[in-house]
Amino acid sequence: MKKTLLLFSLLCANFLFSQNISTGEVTLSPDLNLVIDVSTNTTTITMTGPSNVWFAVGFGGSTMRSGADVIRTDGTTVIDARTTDQVLPTEDASQDLTVVSNTVSGNQRTIVLTRANNTGDDNDFVFTNNLTSLPIIWANGTSTGYAYHGRRNRGATVVSFETTLSTTDSESLDFNTFPNPASDQLNIQLPSDSNDASVQFYDFAGRLVLSTKVSAINAAVNVSDLNKGIYLLKVTSNGQIGSQKFIKN
Image (tube, rainbow, N blue to C red):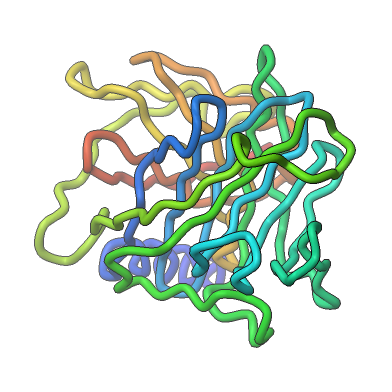
């Protein structure tokens, strides 16, 4: 028990005394959105796109053939790849992505991924939590079968990062949860002046195991797929971040 409490305290301290950066939600096209969150050691990437076509996002490149680190998905699989002079980005030998969730709501698919900031693979972009901007490329097809995207279905931009947590300028978000412990559903009650919130669950190894968004002051999160145990619950809203211990039973 003492070891468990110590690990939890260390994990909380990592959130309270380290700098996290985020792009916030970036609109790449009318149907394709991206969020990149970078902490000390881990990058979380959230991609939202059409559920009935393939789409891809690349980092550190300005064109589709510039040797950029690319994530591409046909909806079923998510592939770590790199752009070359070929039409289809080449799949990396080392797949360094962890798919946290892959869900469909209406005609939109949302995929949440994590990876180490520095995977040690020369094909992967190295993220750091002091980035201020990053070139991004994107593309999507007209079906789930990979094929040439066409000029209208691709683009390039530069995204900006903002600090979301530091020791000096972040206020703590005060929120309530119930029931806690919970087995199937956890209710999160945000302050009355909060808007949409990002909700993340971390295990004791510091791994992100569940990420979702809530839009209501009293919101329910499905936790039935989590293994029994103790988690750190992190909630971000209006530039404020709060954390609590959550027990899954």
